[in-house]
Length: 320
Image 1: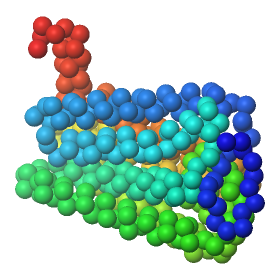
Image 2: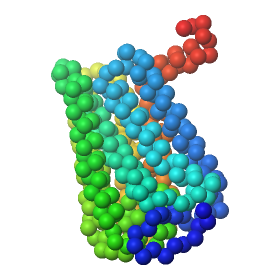
Image 3: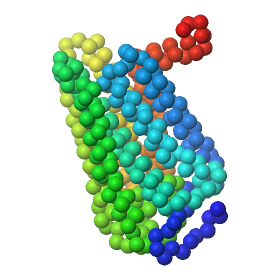
Image 4: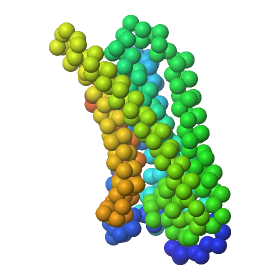
């Protein structure tokens, strides 16, 4: 469908995604980067899920959280990467209004769940380091199931109202979206209506998810570091600290990019070009799902050993 601007009297039947305004000449290269991130995210997270599910020695709370994170990362990447590739490579920018709302809901729900899972993983490490004798009685499968259910309900409860409010806008000024996917505020700013409630709700959701989760994660790691440095043996301190390094890298990559993106989008003003905002938003959603399995694969000894063992068996079937 040709990219023709449509005059919208009431809410449109479709939107047209521009991509990244200002750097249209680099779309093929940007699409290549997006494709690489997406393929690596799918392969890496699928490998993690396969290794964890096939190894009974990895059926522990820490690795259960990791498998949930891998599943969420794969879904998060899938919610935006195909649409972005359609825009950058095939110039297919048309997306139906309901499909746009659906993408918006899944995108922000998976983002919320990602933050919550990282919080759950930090709590798991806190119990393992600071309450090791009670770890088995606290971190049970029932507790993990309840925590995941709460995180899912939180995502739906916080993101759902934002989507409903967008769907109830009486009119839009245009259906041209200066973004590479259906991001909440990018759509809200197109509305020919009072958007103060939507803006305030989006800010509250971001604070509730990113702000609160980040605060508790930092508190957990503060307590962990305090407990680690009190251990009498240097080897014990190093071993305990090494078990936390992958979690720290993952949470820093996700929350660091998310916080930076949010602050520049809200308060960067005219000092930062629009294409920088969009590139940061794309990076924050594409890079962590790609990096997470690499970080855990490299820094977690048990996973690294299982992966090498699986690869060895694949190369030499006689080892099975």
